[in-house]
Amino acid sequence: MRTVHTIAELRARVAAWRQAGERVAFVPTMGNLHRGHIHLVERAREQAPRTVASIFVNPTQFGPNEDFSGYPRTLAEDSCQLEAAGLDLLFAPAVAEMYPRPLEEMTAITVPELSGLLCGASRPTHFRGVATVVGKLFNMVQPDVALFGEKDWQQLMVIRRLVEDLNFPIEIIGVPTVRETDGLAMSSRNGYLTAEERAIAPTLHATLAASAERLRAGERDHQRLAEEAKARLAAAGFRPDYFEIRRARDLQPPAGEQDEDLRILAAAWLGKARLIDNLAV
Ligand code: PAF
Image (cartoon, rainbow, N blue to C red; front, side, top):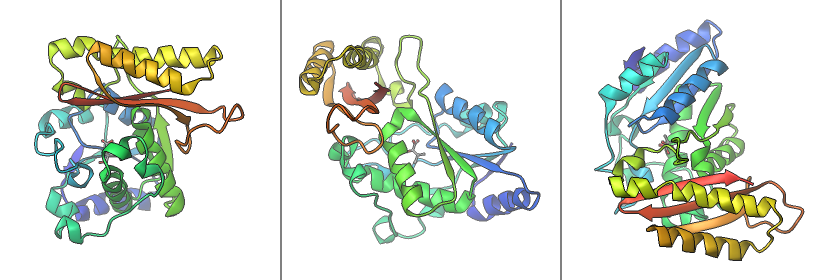
């Protein structure tokens, strides 16, 4: 595995593969890798003979009071894991390489509608930061296919829309969430949990699973279901942000029985960790 830190080195390497007619698969990350990320790389290797991952803690997707400065940076450990997973090329740029001008002077990408819902309601600039950095990374790597975890379902939908609206010739693959044995979705932010909070954390997935089961069994009062789920989370020690039953593709509230492709999405604080998770119904 080779690690590069500049856009020029990245482009030179990928151009050589392209000239040889090789497909390229891409996995963007913010590092502090766990098994979920490694699973993305393994899936990427099934898609193309050449795989690129990025590690970049993107400042523009963090709000002013969020954990940008404290976000774990573990490049040495991450590199070992990626190498063991058979990755070809790691792109690990500095902030100045990605954003050479003051952030407020840089061009940004906004995906309207989807970006303001759910997580976007409490993190108003988050998805603009995600769409901007992913758009830039796509232009730098120019992959044939890019893979994203379904744990960030809203992010996956924002990226699908970005690719559709801006005509990126890139196939987007969503990869099912990798979970701990007790159901907790793997996330870099699980590292913020104390031992006591870690014991409570699987309640988020358990509550989603119980709600999905009730919907499958015919429950139609979504508001009551969501209120009961939030009460269960609060009783367990969470501070629920949202718990919503939405159409999977556009994240709008279902219009009626005809909307069958539903997803339950939740976000809740547990201590200083904001956990998110979702399940298909
Ligand atoms: O999901 C993430 O880790 C980030 O949001 C992403 C897609 C790498 C953009 O910074």
